[in-house]
Length: 167
Image (cartoon, rainbow, N blue to C red; front, side, top):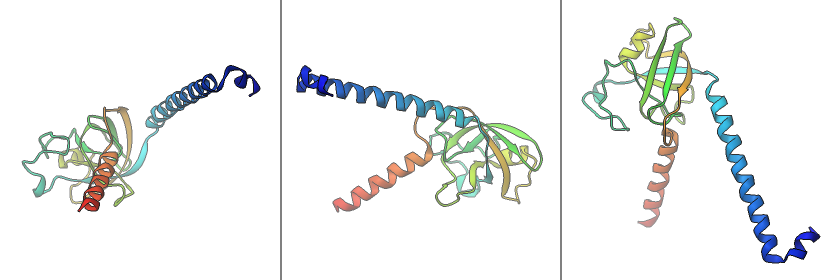
């Protein structure tokens, strides 16, 4: 540390700031690599059926037209828009590939649910729509851009809190 004293306070602070910034950059790189590796591990949980009467002829949270007859549409809480997922039923062994086009299920309310599937997607896995829930493994194949449903929801709640405080 005595060497920094010889360089002067300003130069020493600049060097310390540079070391700090480089450290943050390396930490972000490690975090991103960790996330990529973690995405390769199948997430086990429940797939829930969504798309009842209230969803017909509506847009998804990401602006897509909801189609209950499209087995490739899904809603994911932990995945950003347009993420490609491989869903495998642990009961039937059947798999489908889907794209995240909506937000849900809320993992704060339903911690065991990992994805929502359309009725067509539910049938494609070999499940009866009357079951409502199916045990699945979800593997992320290609991550989409942007924030996850969870991040968007938390930001929305924070904005509502701020608005309430201003009133």
